[in-house]
Picture 1: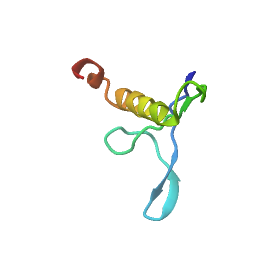
Picture 2: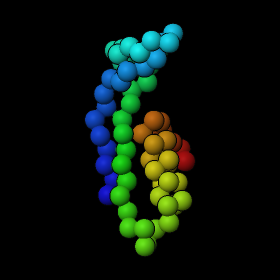
Picture 3: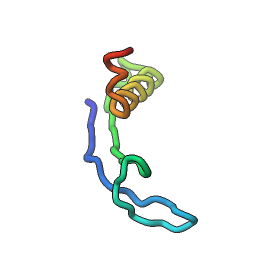
Picture 4: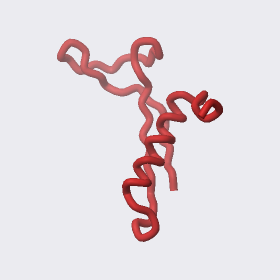
Length: 68
């Protein structure tokens, strides 16, 4: 089961202070949590992490899905 949570503004550290900034893609990154649930008897944790990293890369740059 792959869970994709909502994209939200998050607190960031700016000059040693914590601030909540509006999301501006050129300056600050949006954040979204991904959660993966799998049966450890059938799938090794390493393969699950590799899959989750690949999903993250596709979400960050969807062109990778088409270009390989």
